[in-house]
Amino acid sequence: MTRFFRQSAADHAGPRHRRWLPALLLALCLPVSAAPMSTAKQGFELIALGVAGGLTDGDLSAWLLRAPGDRHYLGLDAGTVLPGIAAGLKQHAFDDFPWPATRGWTRQGLLFREGISGWFISHPHLDHVAGLVIASTDDLAKPIYGLPVTLDALSRHYFNWSAWPNFADRGTPPALARYRFQPHLPGTTFAVAGSELQGQIFELQHDRMRSSMLLLRRGPAAFAYFGDTGPDQPQASQCLARIWAALAPLVRERRLTGMVIEVSYPDGVDDQHLYGHLTPRWLLSELHRLAGEVGGPRPLAGLTVVIGHIKPDLRLDHDTRRLIRDELRQGNDLGVNFVLPRQGQRVWLPLPDQKL
Ligand SMILES: [Zn+2]
Ligand SMILES: [Zn+2]
Image (cartoon, rainbow, N blue to C red; front, top):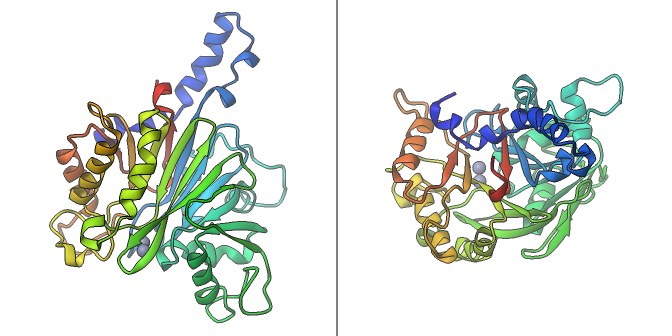
């Protein structure tokens, strides 16, 4: 992995201090139960199941998120699911997972069926749902969270007995009801089943589509997962402005552990051809608006911003990932910690004051 990534938040990914902390506690003659790792750590564990914004059907937008002490992951978009789990297993991303005792299943199967308690879908584009739809025949019952408009589209266009059997709990009969759709209006707070996470959905403008961001909180720690979004100005939208206003107090109180947001194209794509996506220049411009809301000197210094949805380019000598990484690095006058994980990689997002 590049030097860029070695300097990133993944370096906080934990095994090192999980090894030395028990020894340190023993040395200090403290009972380990006085400060168990599982509750002492505040933050989120993020695993990249898919990081590309199109073209490669084995690596499309999908993430898993879990807080220390939670038994299950929440899935965040589901473009690529089973290949992402396989990549995570290869890279030891699930080494801390409390494997269920169920017999007769592969680890990939156990993780998919029992390790993920539910899914949030940011918007119904194919590159955000394909992995879940295709694996739904072998899934267990679980909730799917999203805006009402997103879940309606899932029901009408995928789980409709034409594109695929109807595994939803509504729509074209018979509804097999494996997936319990949980629509939530923007701004309302809801509990995420199988965890202690609280969710809150915010609307995003994605060209002519409605997309969404999920703000997750557990205790003092918060995390923002953005579905596809364009910048406000060329879309004549206020969606990101509203989100920056909501996130600013969390940054100020040092509660925002990080975010996942898209950068689909390198700089140089003109605004008419963004199709509701961000470039490095536009992301930095939007982050400056967040910094302005937060106020004070270097308000976003050290904030982890995980980049996903990088659209590959099939032309020779067009390595969009490298271009985007370099452009973000060159324009990063905010001191943000940009992370571009690969499929299967785990990123630990600690509360800002707990960074070691
Ligand atoms: Zn999209
Ligand atoms: Zn997309």
